Image (cartoon, rainbow, N blue to C red; front, top):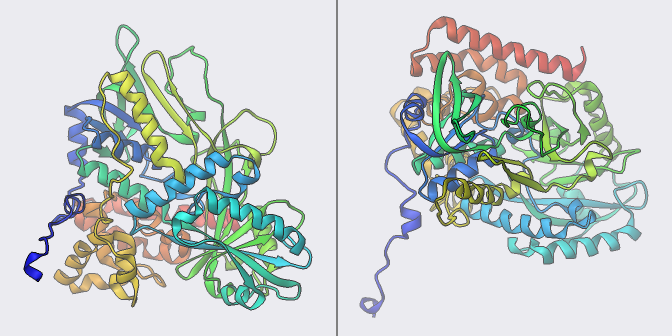
Amino acid sequence: MMNFLPSLKPSRDRADMIGTAPLGFVRSEHLAKLESDQFDILIIGGGVTGAYAALDASLRGFRVALVEKDDFASGTSSKSSKMVHGGLRYIEQGNIGLVRHSLLERQRLRRNARHLVQRLPFLFPILEKDGVFDKGMAKAFETLLWTYDLAGGWREGILHQRLSKAEVLSHCPTFKDDDLIGGLMYFDARVDDARLTLNLVRTAAYHGAAIANHTKAVEITRNNHGKVTGAVVQAGEREIIVRATSVVMATGVWLRDWSGIKKGEERKLDIRPAKGVHVAIPWLKIRNDCTVTIPVPGRSRRATITRWGNVSYLGTTDEDYQGDLDDVHCTREELDFLLEGARSALKTDLRPEDAVGSIAGCRPLVAPPGGKTLEVKRNHKIDIADDGLITIVGGKLTTSRHMAEQTVDAAQKVIGKSGRCQTKKAYLLGAAGYDAQAITATGGTQAHLGERYGTEARFVSDILQADPASAAPIVEGLPHSEAEVIYAVRHEMAGNVDDVLSRRMRARMNARDASARAAMRVGQILQSELGLSEQIIAQQVADYTASVAREKFILLGA
């Protein structure tokens, strides 16, 4: 009987994304392409929106280039709440369309980046008094959750749940139970935002895009007719003129300071940075297994606590920011505000010195001054100037794929070519063939690598097998090995100590002080892999440790 069954063939879209060798992602090679090639689209900005636009355009068959002045995701895209979600508060704002679309995009990310995007339960405790809401408000809130489920929450395969008091405490044993009645739980997703962005640019490179970090665009070039022809970029001391038919400004909040428009032209978009901060505290202080929503005394805003490894992220704030966009930090005042909220809801003694890390970034809101940033809708805007300059700004991480699709659609009008968007079902590197439940089931090295690299984890384990000494831990208290540093330099375009510790590993957020102690060893590996001088490495280590020390000083105020 078996002879009559059809013979299966490998899935082409899966097989095409799995190779026998790691992607060659070497900055010098990509800089050479930037200098020599003519491009259809040049994207300025290596955050999640620019990265997805590069992937979208490369999949359509266009010649694509992307430059980032610092490192991929070094701005807002590594400083988000790490949530891939529809956004309950957007329903409260009446923006159901955004929620519906966000939930559809959430599921696309759950499929296409399945090794990086995991399910995340959200818990709302119900209290007799002084909670996010009491039992009377809980009924109204459950109506909101039903709306959320019907708008697309159901796509996760599980609807919201009503929990007993004991069930709430099983998810967060430190929650104060004096006035606790029960809780409501619904489901969204989480992602390491920096690694998602990195994965997007690497996948774009896999499909032919020229990509370079630490390459700053300093001028938009135009021809005698005033039409955009590319940009002048600086890679260290090297200046490159990148030739392109269209240029996309995907620099997020940095559009406030440089929009790329012609001198004398009036800005069409109001960019309003909204600062948000998170602090990392030891998980044993909280012991939550999901995202717990807590009330903040005297404020209408809710705070959240999300477990990530052996720390819990506490956040966030949402305030106007007028300062230097390259120097945003969590302050002692903001830390005290978040800790006060946590102490009011939890049976735990949290002190400022418990914070093992912090991040601060600015959301790129498109809105004029006035009113609270919390009330501004997270819609995005795309502008096509008469000279062919395209600007994309606003939105949120969850909708970045759709924003990129519309951005490339706009670019097609400028370049006079067309192609079909393919990113709705396009796997990112490491996602095709990845089975999260099977890989992470019993823990261990494979589980740790799988959640970071997906099916590409085999290339990291190749390094481990070839050099057993590379299994040595690199940051005290974290599961990362020296092999991951080697892989980051060889295949993830990490060029300095900060690239590795802040974004390839997230060690600066999860173990700030330990990451500073690891800086010298990371520098030694960079020196060995890239052939850098002792002076350059010493400067990188000094810069990193000084930056960490300043971050800690601003956070603790002492």
